[in-house]
Image 1: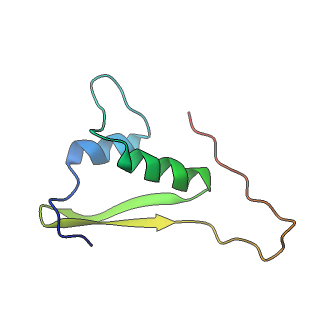
Image 2 (image 1 turned 90 degrees about the vertical axis):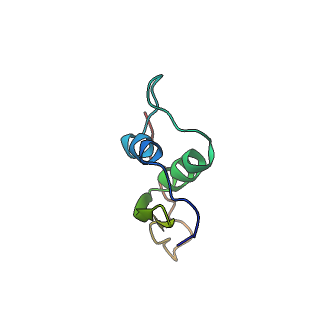
Amino acid sequence: MDNGPGIPDQELETINQGEETPLQHGSGLGLWIVYWTVSLYGGEVTFVNNSPRGAAVILSLPRVSTDSSVQATPVEHN
């Protein structure tokens, strides 16, 4: 958990919807880069404990197989 001002609700709502619109958009690229990267590898981004005193973000990624011939399949985004 950080000790910053937290993530604004509008930012969270936009990320959770997975797309931006002219009326609802994020203020920067940071959260989108994290979201796109984690999603590309089949993972999830979860925002927890978001408050004016800070935020915590959980990045969940699938476990990689020990068999080097198995490749993960990226998730497509719309």
